[in-house]
Length: 388
Image (cartoon, rainbow, N blue to C red):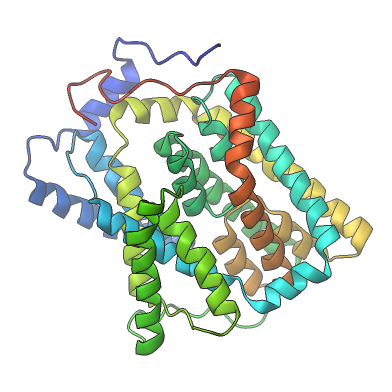
């Protein structure tokens, strides 16, 4: 079977440049490294929030952790906080699967099925081409191309053996590009709806009984799922159970903004601290081709939106946001501030995410068999003695 060739053994010029600019955290104590990462996280989140990027609460900490890791930092996020963060994200996804969205899915399921199959097939084709061209190792390109909630896809990819760092690189680059393009399209096509998006109330009142129930559900996912050996179980178990309980009215999922922010930060740090210099070099080398593939997928989904408008009479912006490849949280924010059919947009985004969640592993294995792809060996020690 053919395999992807690893990067050359000799340090590249880009590797040396990264070494000069990032310096070294390896000689500093863990307290200093954590302080630096916390400070940088706050700065990056503030900057990304200022430019209106919805994924700022995860991207900011991830970029901060990458800076520390590229500077030979030695930090690692403990398993228990990471599992709890995944469980909270699973509860957040469960809360978004409302009866209204399920009703919209049931009413328009043939239309939804056609669009979802088309978008997933297009993303799979792009992932297959990136794998054949050896832009990224193994099944990484397949998971990175999957249109869905970026944090969930990243966690799922890790559970199935893909390189979580490069999957995160692709997923969050797509979040940025999709958000920028969708914002531009929204401004060009329609006049924004009256009013502004409500600011986050970080210290708002908490409903303590629903919060306690939500934390019990999250804790069950964090502690029990790993024992069940379910891939990405700490996220999937609370997501499925929470969707059933919340949708049926048995419980109300209560997630204070500060808890969500902390969970995003933990996931971002967990991914970012694994970005050693060799991985970062590989990501930067792949950047032009990965960017081109993402823009191609955005253009293809725009074509599906046009077909949806022409055949089903759906207004253009609703169709575009509904077929937009991923970044469901950013799409939700843009849709809420525009004159579009928000339930239709979120129903299609949610249904596609659920389909990808269940077909992603089989799809990645199928493409791996077709291309003879295998993952790289360990990149982390190729230019240094640092242990992964």
